Length: 547
Image (cartoon, rainbow, N blue to C red; front, side, top):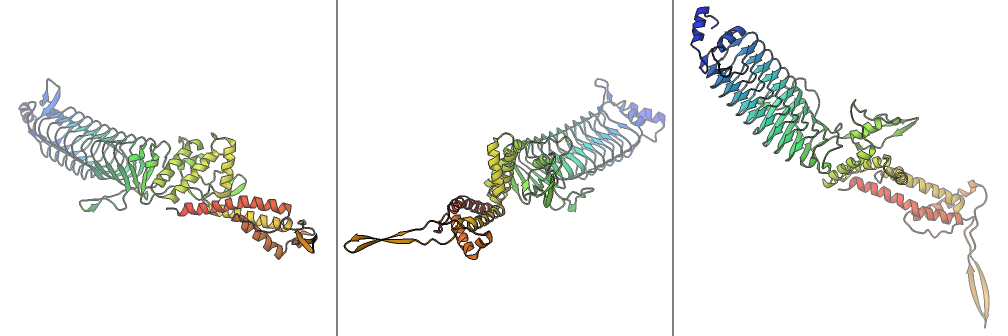
């Protein structure tokens, strides 16, 4: 048509009527020439162009291209076609297959509300500008294998009722908000330099999703069947996702392959897969494998005690080394923590050094809200027979209870003492340090005031009963409090006796040593407190090696 003179072109167009087949392979179209072609094909009753089989293979569309509202009753073929500027197929109805293999869209391409009754083939297509498939309906198979989206790809509200293949490369964000995948069994492998947004999407059939992306958003996404997400580099947000059946999320160590070749991963530099949020998720059906959970928000997760963690997973840790707390230097107990605890400690007026600061807009939860989260994670680890791992969460639970405002002051004081003495029964070094200090103090007290001045020597008296008989009675002498300079009391002999008293006290035994009044009460206190410290130390060791 581009080479016909005006009279010949008018004569050709006069032969066309709505529903006719057309063949314009390799034709060069301007916007005006395309409008002239579609005019006689427009149905007067609907005002929409209606075509039969339409072949535009290798056609070149210069300027803006508009097929808005067109109806293709037969096959629509745009194989290898080139669109030099924007291409609009808004509201187009494809009654049979639509072929866009190897087509090139230099500008914006829009298939908003388009309906594909047959297969939709975008194999190897290149979309240089933003691509809009919002509200499109794919009633049969759809393939985007090898397609490359250089700008944002929008599939918001699209519905995929047949098998769909996305072995695709997205150089920007890929948005599938509110998309419906009824029979999609696999999605990917695909690479997305920006964010793959599956928020509020619905997956009706078992699906495997393979994605290499900087971020994957699954907010309010619904999986009505089983799903396996195999990811690389991605930061995953599962806020309020609905999991009706088991869903697994695993980090893949090696790049995905398509047709024997590795899928290019342009501008994807993050080392691994991390989950940012599980808020609102029912974790009873969730399995995480080899996932980084250092920045994960757990608060608000349902059935968190049934969450399964497999492989190598990473949680946030307390700051290491010496840290400043007000005017003092402190060393935080090494343990795995929640990022929500980091945020709470970071916003306090003191002792914030080393704790992660919350982002602007993040909700900072109080200890009373974090204690149940630690408790449920502890139960999850205990049910998985990982007692040493559960110990860290027990420590976190007790820390939150100690700082919570909803428990009585007396109980918090008791928890503070429990923490100081043995780290809630989890820090053997702390308990044994206190034990050694208590024993040393008791030994010193015994040497200075507990042992009598001299060993007791009983005195004997004989009493005559007549008939030449005598009764000899031994009367023990009373202990004499030590006197003299303190230095003289610190002798090796007194140390040995004091040490024997203390060691016997630790194992609830009496030393048999005669003591002063002060020494007697000191021994009683020692027999009460030091075995408790020994027991706490042994308990801490047990909690770290328990299977």
